[in-house]
Image (spheres, rainbow over the protein chains, first blue to last red):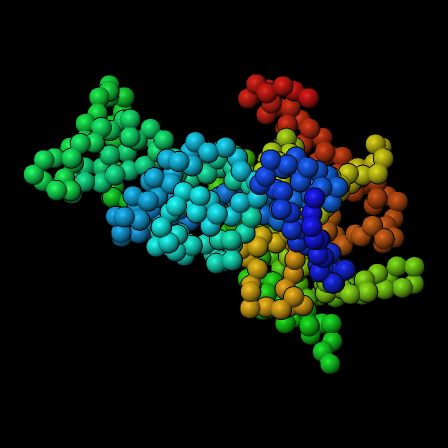
Length: 190
Length: 205
């Protein structure tokens, strides 16, 4: 059950916003915690699950698209692969999600920079996997020979087989098989 | 000591205008690609309208004891949809991305009346838009969102322009004519929604 519930002093303005310290929300007794918070107090996280997940997913996507550091991009690919298989998770912040997967501090800092407000990085919400997937749906890898490899993020590793070339550090051979169903021109590289 | 009008004017310029712009952009982002949205807009309440509302009387007493904190539509947003069933689709989406303290479907009091209709929300301002440099007294916690069809929107705009208020004395004939136009807007909404469902093979209600 909640150990402490604090409500701001102004009845006119801050009556609706409070803080419930709940030490069971992530434990096996979460059903009891849910009862006290959601049914007894008729309360929920201030940021809805979809809104919190959307904000986090956009920050992850922007970091992937704008970072110039290959190691940061590799971290994000790994995180995305793990998160795609994760169930919904209540009461978690962006910081806690990244900590769960041991994402290095440097990568976390870059992701945090893409939050409109730094405090939101530590704000709790319910992680909604489907909402997250909307923003990181397609993955593109660009090679220095001009090739752009694009596939649904969750199947990229299966669609493109990647093998390192002997005697050429950092060079990979990609291969794939399939029938051609469409071809397109694009104006400029994104 | 500053007057209420001075305090609101400062808040409007420092906080509300920018907040309305952020909310409008956020709503436009959320609903980009969402079918049959005619327009999305948000505005900071004008000083005149705020003062008019803030000084209202009820049973001989001021209606608001603390208008700066009690009036919740200092920022108002509106989403206008094509059909009645779209209002419900938009409502569902809003409930996924915002917390609200009030959600009301506004309809005339009895089945034999026609007048203003729409879905109104009082929503929490998303935490991302809260300016941390402001004190609690300078900022607002809530904004109002109205979701209406094109016909509901058109009727309420024209009715508002004519200056009729629920409390004002309107001649019986004028009342009947206003109700007639509201009934026509209601009927058009019903028929367009039915046609839309038939064309898209959705079940007709």
